[in-house]
Image (tube, rainbow over all chains, first blue to last red; front, side, top):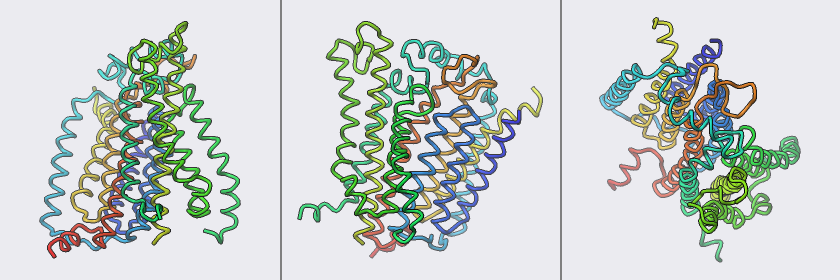
Length: 181
Length: 141
Length: 120
């Protein structure tokens, strides 16, 4: 129970930080708040027993993402220009996000409760993974076993996506001509 | 950041340990939290910290751009190549059980270690390359 | 099922929906491209949190074999989100690289200023 209350407190903090990101015009502050949000998300994942995900979120969000954001800000601009949207557009955007949020909230009413051991997600394929993967792969960390073996094709695709993104960034930003000279 | 002597000294001591920790995360991913994705990111973080403190000139001396781009390709080739190796040994694509004909579970374990290594090399290469090209662009302004 | 259980069981899902809405609002109303990327990251955070909340099992432990453990949380959403986080940072870096190039050719990363430059 105490776990759940600390999770809710941290998620509330996340929402407050997200609202601060809406208001702030300093991009430097936005980048640093995004890093802080990643750390809080990592804490929430740890409390939800997702240690691998928490580790990834901590190093990616607070480490790499922040460094890349700061690099991009140093190459562009530090301040967001004052807001020039018409009020009608703002209200329309608020309406669209509220309506889509209301639809999602309505959908969550049918979802199983947090931690329900009889939820459909935990009953079918997950039970088989938990029962079989340690013995059939010899790897005690089930997340690693599923990632690399059961879902090997999926991970190959993800690595290909990362590869393509990296090649895209290098092609966009590298000064090729000076290297050849 | 050349004027901050404390930062320079601390980073000089820390970077080897960050890289060592990346290798630990890579190899211990089977038994605890961690694995190729996390190890690659930690490895890149070590090089990024070095670049921020000592500048892009010294960073590319230590980690040449061509080596980083080699890493980007090698990881993906290692991963996809393992699939072809299992096919050559008579299994399906990425079915690691055939890597050890006596003990399929051990074959799976070996396959997972190789795959995670491929993932780690590509992720480390991509994220390092991305930061280095950003920093190079900044230095040429 | 009483009201307290109902709210406690759904609060995390509602929290992730709130993050999603805030991210969507930032993407729609802000003209600054870096701010838009930050909004997209908040949106992604909401989706990731929702997935991980599905994986949780009460009194379960992290899905790493341990002799004292009886119940493990569902490892499958962990795998999906683990790879999604790393892909997200790769695509974010591609977006930031595009923004840097946009700044170099337009001299601005504000949407309306770019539109004015396009009009001539």
